[in-house]
Length: 352
Image (cartoon, rainbow, N blue to C red; front, side, top):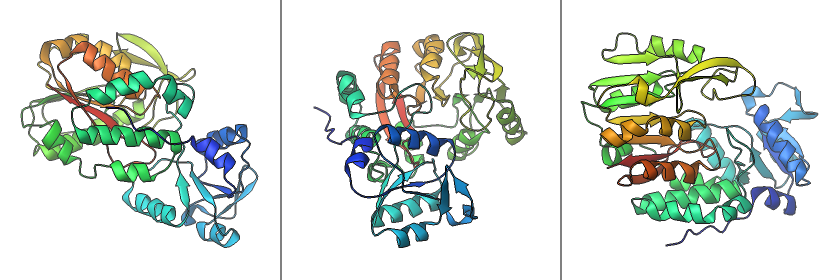
């Protein structure tokens, strides 16, 4: 079977279309997107924000408007989303906007260089096709196709069409979590995924090992897991070996490797944990490939279930599953997208 990828680059589409382009959102994401649009000759007509953030101020020389004001100003326009969200109310709001005017959410990678374009897909088509044909079920193939078409086109309809809204379906039907799991949570943030795991298993598990490199996040993780039995916490990042790396000073969910920032200790899982691991989860802002290498002995010895985030780097959609199959060719690889715009929370789930 072949991938059905037919979309045109969002940047070129916006350049060729005659409708005004308005940016929804402010901040670093908006600045980066506006910069790329300028490279394609697209001038931004206006910028708007959610009503509660509009207070008569300006951003990049534009007075920040309300959505209703943009609708009064233009008969029709293209909306370019410049922030990420998983909040249900906001997802519903964006869907309503997309029903009224076209909403695009250009894919800008969290880590690595370049943007995901049609040209990038064509250059790596053989790798995408290889992984597409290795996916374990038809739903995975549909979601994989939708996510690639989204990354090229920026059309949010692909995300709404491919979203798994109830994550317990993943835990039950794919990962089949039970009440005696030994889980390694790499990129534990404030314990949000631990809360998901334990809610699903009725707070029953054998042991949870949680790694979080960011100091502020680690303090939240410590507080949020206080009183839980069988939980080991490490203020460490996951990597291919023990080392010290530089992470961005900016705290938050997206703490990541940076040219400037604070030194953080990192480790491979193989040398850190001597236990019969049953599941590995990785959400580590673009370091997933390195972390897989640091888990190779654990994977070869125990064949744990895998939950690997695949949205930080352009190449994640093929490089991560290729690495997983290299470590154990018997893995069945599933692909799902949980509620998020842009294509964050697009993950590989693997079982033997």
